[in-house]
Length: 183
Image (cartoon, rainbow, N blue to C red; front, side):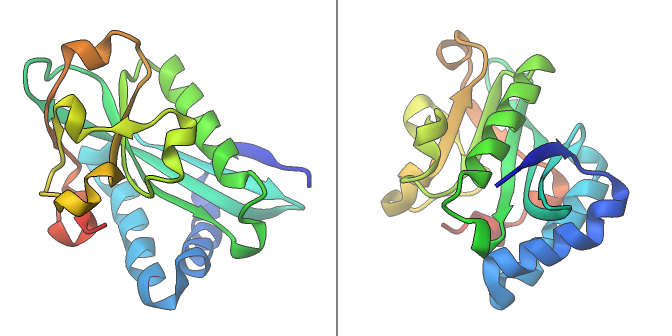
């Protein structure tokens, strides 16, 4: 399968939203699609990085990274959160999500981002360098149940940052809702 990763543009919005709904299913997909729209329009989420994976002229994957800030000893640490990652069900388990994650992290590193957070599957994201964030002193915007603590993860794009930064993560207004923090 030929796969191109590129930045999303405004003309991609309908295809991205349809993909999100398909990837997450009817019950959850609409809510996540609304979150994508809200995050892309939220000034507190900027700068944002929105990437699409295209195969045969069809968008088969999408990833969104938005700005977060830290309340702690290094509040100026440039940080982002990955939310959400969507891959068309027919393309899952073919490396699309991994390519989107790797490309996004590479671009964020180049742009000077030091930390990237994610609330996601603890069996998936560690293969891309994410480790439990709570154990490293990073508190999620809303409490994560102890049984799901491994789902709150961080990756340092600058090697010394994990030793220097800690604190509570404050996300964009659109993501600052406890219903988005249930894993």
